[in-house]
Image (tube, rainbow, N blue to C red; front, side, top):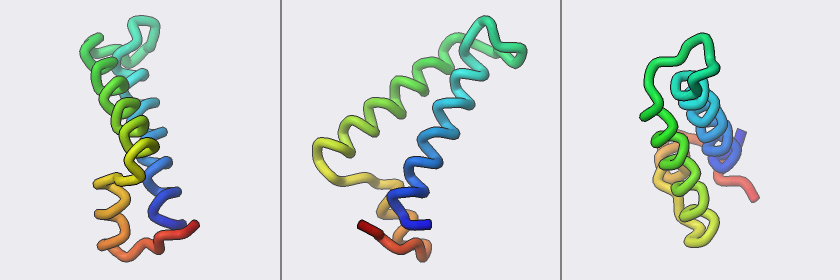
Length: 69
C-alpha cells in the first residue's frame, strides 16, 4: 500500500470508530463528544486536499511506505 492509501484507511477507521462511540443509537455509545473527533478528521482531510500536505502521510513515508501517484 502507498502512503496516501494508508492515510485514507486510517481516516476511514477513525471516522467509523468515532461514530461508533459517539452516535447515541450505537450499542457501543460512550459520549457524544466523540463526534468532535469525526469533525477533526474531516477538517484534516479537507485541509490535506487543499494544501496537498498531510502529516500522517509524511509519517507513513518515513516508516517505509511508498508515496504512490
